[in-house]
Amino acid sequence: MSAQASRTEPSISLLGTTALLFEAPGDMNLPSQQRIWALAHEAESWPEVREAVPGMNNLMLTFTRAPRHLDALCERLCNAWSAATAVPREGRVVELPVVYGGEGGPHMADVMAHTGLSVEAIVELHSAPLYPVYALGSHPGYCYLGGMDPRIATPRRKTPVLSIPGGAVSIGGAQTGVSASAGPSGWNTIGSTSMVFFDPAQDPPAMLQPGDMIRFRVEGIVR
Image (cartoon, rainbow, N blue to C red; front, side, top):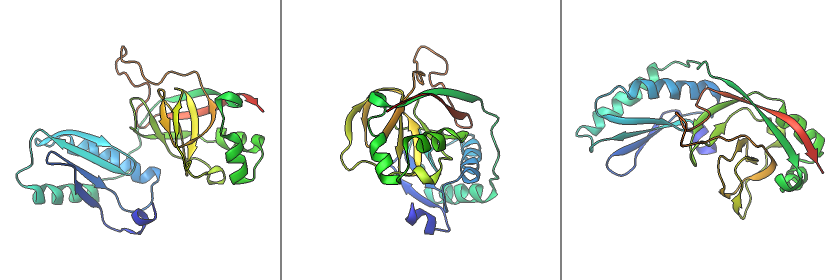
């Protein structure tokens, strides 16, 4: 993040021959992410663009075939970024009941050791904000959230866990998130929720979309 914060101009890199990644300059924050959403909305209307996928302070564009005039396309993308304004999305507010600690939060002690805070303080700080969904990624239905209190920021684990269950509530660096399905993770799991985030039988299959908001409701604390 420090390298990104030092840049004052966007960065564009190729992903093979039929995709590119646009990375916004500056710090990762909600106004910047709202500009990314606006840029995605603009770029998805371009005839050469197959899909515009917002990420965390970045945007991936995919194409049906390799662009013939890549330099002109990159210039157009940068100009569109300069013109983009932060436009809030009127998303839903979803409340997630969370049981903190215990078997569902096996790394709570590690977060306590790093922050020097009690479990009650960590739970209070973690459950206080209304978290905006910045982007979907990592695995189907997973939400990248902004807005976590920096006092509970905890580095990712040196050795990733081979599998955490769906619904695991975790902290990784300055972010928090909820696993939508079982899988490996390098984040610190502090609790769990029974909410289902992805169902291929539903339309859309992902429960949440960028612009929605999450509030963690304390259902219990297990010491």
